[in-house]
Length: 119
Image 1 (cartoon, rainbow, N blue to C red):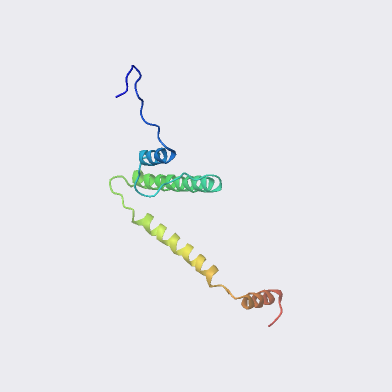
Image 2 (cartoon, rainbow, N blue to C red; image 1 turned 90 degrees about the horizontal axis):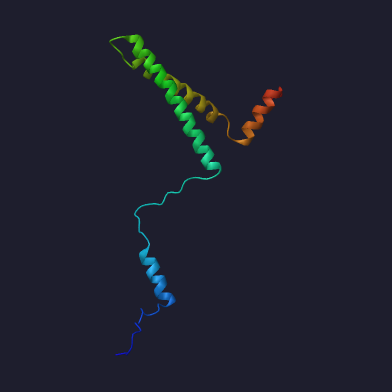
């Protein structure tokens, strides 16, 4: 054994040993990592959230007005019917756009017909 008052410190670790220790000490989490959106995506998400909030406020005011006006009995059937009609109307509009000619030749024929030339 070594003589004297000097104490031996811990042995110096090699670079590989340090790397191993660092990787072990990291906190392991389960599942996918989520990062907050930045730039254009963040702005789009904010706009979407703002739109949703505005729609919710409008719906809440309509429901509360009907509830206050109804007195003791209150049914949401008229609101659901209105919503279903609106959805059907939007679906019809979407289908109109999708059902239009998708081939280039058909589009060109339609444009010529609009100009007044028969093809």
